[in-house]
Each structure stands twice: as structure tokens, then as C-alpha cells.
Image 1: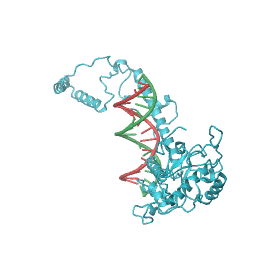
Image 2: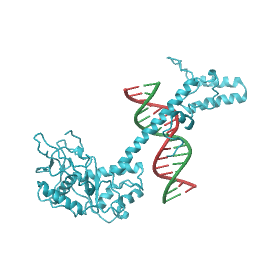
Image 3: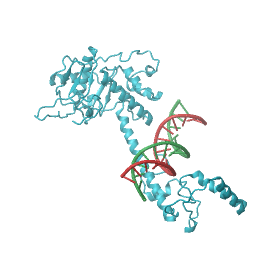
Image 4: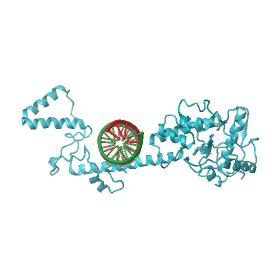
Amino acid sequence: MTGPVCVGQEESALITKEMPTRSILHDDIDCEEESDFLSDDDIDFSDQSEATTVETVEHESKTSGNKKSKQTKANIVEKDEPKVPKKRGPKKKKMTKARLMRLRMRRVKANTRERNRMHGLNDALDILRKHVPCYSKTQKLSKIETLRLACNYIGALANILKTGIRPDGVSFAKALSKGLSQNTMNLVAGCLQLNPRTLLPDSPAYTKPYQFLYENSVDFSSPLISQSEFVNQCMTSYDSFSPSRGNACYSVPSMNQIQHTNIQTPLNDLGSPRIMSPLQGFTADNSLQIEAMTSSNFLRCDNVIDSYPNNYVSMPNQVMNIAPIGQECITTCAVMENMQDSFLDNDTIVMIGNQHGNIFDHVSP
DNA sequence: TAGGCCATCTGGTCCT
DNA sequence: AGGACCAGATGGCCTA
């Protein structure tokens, strides 16, 4: 914690510890008698520069010791400025000692609120840091980099869902790295176990986007697949391409960690398992656990699944229902992965979503 | 040492 | 009157 203030202390203590304010403390004012306080008409709390001007003028007149000069200056001001009718309404209150204290206390409370507000903002940013790829406790992303990376991440994931094409690691990393600093780009590259040079704009590593297709795909011959068969495939498949953790810093839990989390399959009115969208349900913490596969490892996105309450995947020529395939998060992810593979083979654009089109639109179940 | 990042204070504005 | 939000200012810390 930096800064001049000790957070969490009593306000009374804060009064003495906080930095003196320019407009409220007025340490230069002798507060012994009520008459010594200046009224609000004399002190402009809203514009320090104006107050300074008044002080300067008065100082000049004091040093010269000539009342006339002060009057002359006042006359000049009056002549130059158009006459303004006297303000109506209640007269401004005098700056009494009690009022001064109230204002000071109000400022202290406002500072506390502002601190708490910023702490809340930072807490939210910390949560966001954990949800973007390349989360690292040792190399903490700055605020701006976190926001940029999150934007890029959302865009990249949306692109995957929109096109159904799984990008290679370099393409994905490049998409994540748009507008990021060199340090963060290196971090992204490290997390994806890539050479940072491959992320340079003119890198010849991969010339086409999505050139490198992921190899560890599950054979998904039929869109309607039995639960047991699918789960078996998923377990085998995901075990095989679990990332080597190494230096990579992912938003945990990884697939291996969440694959045994039991989540109840929602039931319909008849008590049967409800038909689910491939992006619906099956999460460890009621959030989406899609793993966007890359050439090297996987990335993860959260908190999207609740936005996919519908039961189908639409394609240009067909609507495919996804059977309730299991009670574990991994299956949902596997469905997506396999569907991407099978559709990709047919060079078909996969539209995943609901009647309202936008996959990010929230629809109440 | 300059520059980036951050926490904090502050006053202004808007809203309740 | 008071709270939320915002942006500017300031000073501390860290790193290249």
C-alpha cells in the first residue's frame, strides 16, 4: 500500500493523517473567533485560481499600505465587468468552525468511499486477470493490459464460435496480442509455449490464419452420440492433450481438474434430461468452461455458458440437436471441439446460438 | 534517470 | 445533503 493514508483507520485518525486540503483546511486562517472566518462569498471553493487572485490583490494593497490603491483596483474591475444583479436566494452560510469541521469530515468520508470504490474496481480487475489467458501471480498484468487482453480474448473466442474454426497457437496468440505491450506479448507467447518472435507482425511462422489445425481431435462421426461413448472419447481425448503446465499460466481449473466435477443435468417437465446446447450446463462453477484448442495447448473461457440456453446448433441445411451427453463439464467442451472438427471438414460455417441470433445475447431459460 | 504504473486525494457534476 | 462517478494532480515505487 502506497500513499499517505493508512486505509482502514478510524475517520478521526484520518483527519490528522490525511494530506491537508487546499480548499477546506485553510491552515492559514486564524480560527479563534467566529468573526475571523471568511464567508463563502469571500472564499471561492470551486476555483482556486480565483481565490489566489483575490489574495494577490489584497497582498499587494497590504504591502503598499495604501487604501486608495485597493479602491482603484476595485473600481477598475467594476468598470471592466458588466454589472451583475445581486444573487437572490438564501445568503450563503458563514464558514464557522463547526461548518469547517463538517466539510472536512465530509471530505474524509468521501475519500474513504473513493478508496473503497477503487479497491472494488481493482478487485474486479483481479478477477478479470484470472479469467484471461496468461494469468500469472508473479508477473501481474497492468490494468490497461488486462483490459486489452480481455477484449482480444473475447474477440478471439467469439471468432472461434462464429467460424467454427480452431485457430493454431500462433494465430490465437496474435489475436490475443493486438495492441499489447512487448512484455505482455512475451507473456502471451510464454503461456502458449510459443517463441515470442512468432508474434511479431512480420513473423513468417504462419502466413495464413488458422493454418495449423489442432491434431488431438476426437473422432466425431455422428452428431448424435451416446453418452457413454462420448464420455469415454472425451476422457481419453482430453487426457491426451492436457497442457504441460511448465511456465504456462492458465486460468485454472484445467480440464484435468474439472473433469470429475459432477453437475446435474437439468431435467425437463417430464423428468427427463433436458436437451442441452453444446455450450450449456456442465460447468464446475456454473460458468462456461470452453477450451479453445490451440496447436500447443488450450485456452479457456468462462462465464459464457449461461448465455446459451438454447438447444440446437444451426447450420445452413440442418438443425442438430445435442443429446444430454453427460454430467461433466468436459463433455460440453468435447462436443464443441468435435463439432468444429466435423463441420470444418465440410467447410461449413457453424452457427451456434439461439433464435435471437447473437450468441452473446442473454436469454432467460 | 526517465518513464510507466499505481494509489490516493481532490473538486466537479449528476443523481437521489 | 450526501453518495457515486469521473478526471486531474501528485507522489511513491519499480524497471529498463
